[in-house]
Image 1 (cartoon, rainbow, N blue to C red):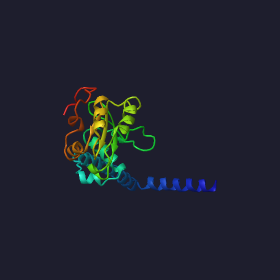
Image 2 (cartoon, one colour):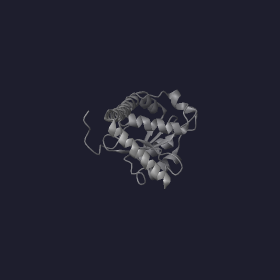
Image 3 (cartoon, one colour):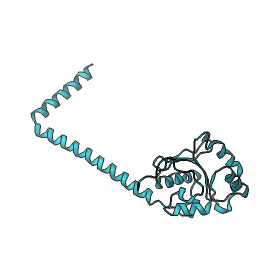
Length: 204
């Protein structure tokens, strides 16, 4: 109780002193306002540079091969963000039900992406139908995706390619990944038979 009274007394004394010295009050308010403005400006500047960084984001295949599998998921997320999907998010991990990245493109289509990283690139094990079975079973009914994609820095088996075509799944192999990651063309312009937009084409 004594501490509360003491604090109240100090606060009251400080307020009386400030009231008696209005110039100091003005200076303090100006400093606080200036600090807030500086914070807002810096935040906007960071956001602007982040947008610039994402628009100019590029990956070469050696960079991608050197990534950890979780970093590969982050890279795919960032590429989707660069392409115009501000809600792109990495969701891979335990219990991810086959999805590592989710995003909504500027046309309203929901993307569900599974990522398979191979340290040895083309020399690694080819991605086969078992991974596609999982993605096919969850991409639309669980994650409500419109475009279901499996991305790898390696290769796919012939059976996987056939299964993907039959089930309307999209495959991004090493060659297509190199084109997407090192360029500036959105993934939906590189893939064939992508579902039509859910909403009108956004104005440029």
